[in-house]
Amino acid sequence: MPPRRPYGGPVSIRVEPDDLAETVTGFPVAHLLTVGGRPRPHVGSVRATVTGGTVRVDGVGRTALGDVARDAAVTLLWTPAEPGEYSLIVDGSAAVSGDGLVVTPHRAVLHRPAAAPGRSAAGCAADCRDLPVDG
Image: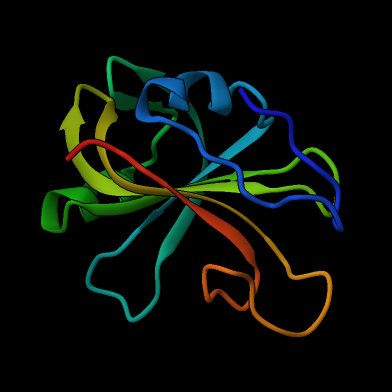
């Protein structure tokens, strides 16, 4: 996994799909965001591991399982250990598997708030970098 750099340094952090599993190990907490019949997302803390290009999500509650049965679109958010560090955001499609989920990633990004007003080279209003995923 490439080192994360403090503000002021280079912000280009590329994580290849094969490196997603290693990248996830640097994040202490995962959250699953699902949508259902409500006008806002449902958020829950989960255990998520990357294996073979998919993300296995355990610790999923009844609401999230029901949401995925209605709409497979999910987002996984790994929050940073320290303020000012990157969060990892993975958008994907989920399928119910036993009492958990299997998520196929479609897009992944390392993201943190901008250090100063303006736009990054990628045109993002924050310090972010798209991560390629197969799919």
